[in-house]
Image 1 (cartoon, rainbow, N blue to C red):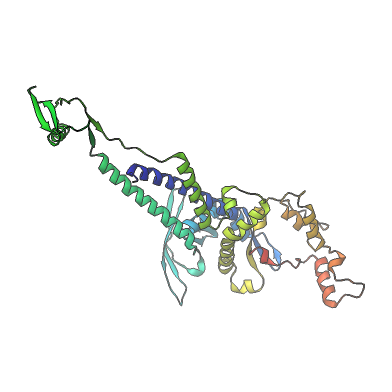
Image 2 (spheres, rainbow, N blue to C red; image 1 turned 135 degrees about the vertical axis):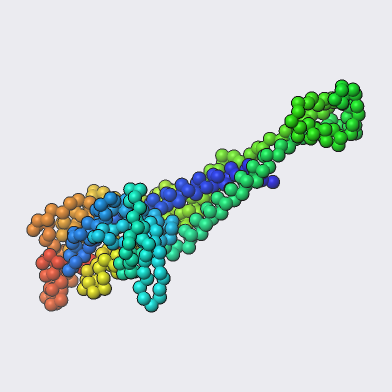
Length: 395
């Protein structure tokens, strides 16, 4: 039978490990987003304008973009939603708000409150859904894991209350040697008397409940001792429990077990799996939300867009990646684009912006190229963006 002490010990350890596991999972995902670059494409080219500044450097006067996105993703994962409002050409995370849900018309938001540096500001104006970036999480596994942690917390509180109630009532044992139907003792005046075991236990109980100082004489072979609460939880049990919670947390947040526990064999593969399963859906959510609210339908259909470049999250060793970088150069990437992928600054020279393509990618078998082929190559030579799909960003 598990004692209250064992139950409390185990549950407290569960809560400690679960809290650490949740913080680790949220931190891994949030930092991956914060370390990435939000790309602004206008008229087929990357632009660094005010929107780029807000998304990558400083969304508002009191926060860096890194802090901003870490907090935004944290709320999205733990609170299941995050509301970002565009006020005074700046982005702010709403700490509280009231939303009027609608189906056929845009939702409206009121009572929007922003907290910055311990100062609370309640915005006097209302917003429509077109003015608000409302991120919502539909990950039922995360919700289920958080609910399980809450149940552990409630169980711990119940066990602690029961243990307190139990511990407030002292319990004792009366050890009797062999078969002893009667007990020889003395009364208050010191005269010998004979009592049964039940009578003796009753005398002990009265003595323990009394506030007066009394002395109870024991017969030979009798021993009265108080029961002490003991725990049977070993350190091995705690380690096993911690590992189980870590694995369950990794599963809830779609983080590969090897990545979460640090059991990494192939770093590149593990990073790709982490981005694909744990971060990919958030990237998609941000891409859709930012394009819908900051770009708009008309400009988006003209080719303007905002998208998240996850390549900046990965560490690039230029020596190990030299062959791959050279391959990119041969299919039309210019030097500036290759340098940016490696984490270096662009040269922004006429030479660094030139594009070349190797002959085996031109379908040149000794004959004349078609008009379309010549046009494609001319576009590359003219400095236009290479024919690179955005799909790799949306993985």
